[in-house]
Length: 235
Image 1: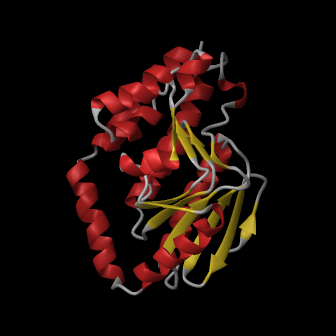
Image 2: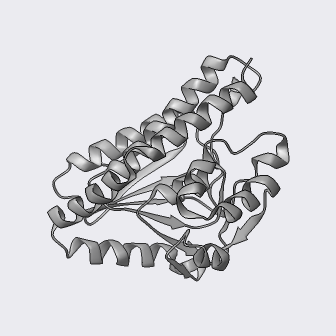
Image 3: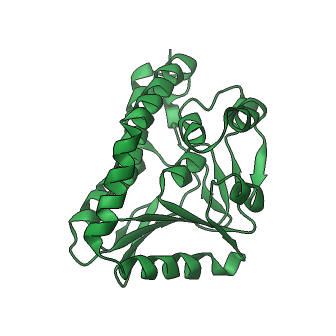
């Protein structure tokens, strides 16, 4: 798959699809396009993995709700459904998904890193669910934090809007590796190469087995968060 739009760039490197988020925030349309790209990647017989990365000093700052804030609750709901669909595609994809976290991963970006199977972070990467700072709340991003962190850790991030550096994220299990900024993509591609050396069916079974352990709790938590988000942002 090759192509791009104003928010996403799809490129191929061997058996890996590299998806670059070219804007700091993703609209509902961009979320749906990314979901579709995931589904198409799964049907490509020669693809073995997907890498998600950002551009410049930003991985992803979450969602661009546009006119949804203070607008129609239906607009907030539309965005939230696209957000949930993307997380369902990432976690349910048969192919391993690698986050190459090149910079800031805030809000929904934090959640997207958590949804990926493995994550490589640049030393300059920073992680936060900072919505509380702007009078909002990380209702949906909190679902990802809940899966990875203890209650005290998640509450510290959610209630205070604290930011973690890459090494703190490593210690908390949010990422697997921290490397120098110029080695993020080479390292992610190296991980993809290692994965390609294993039997595709075995990788699929690992992902399916782990997802079955979740028993749909992640999506239920996302939907619960969306219901609160509609109340908070919509009218």
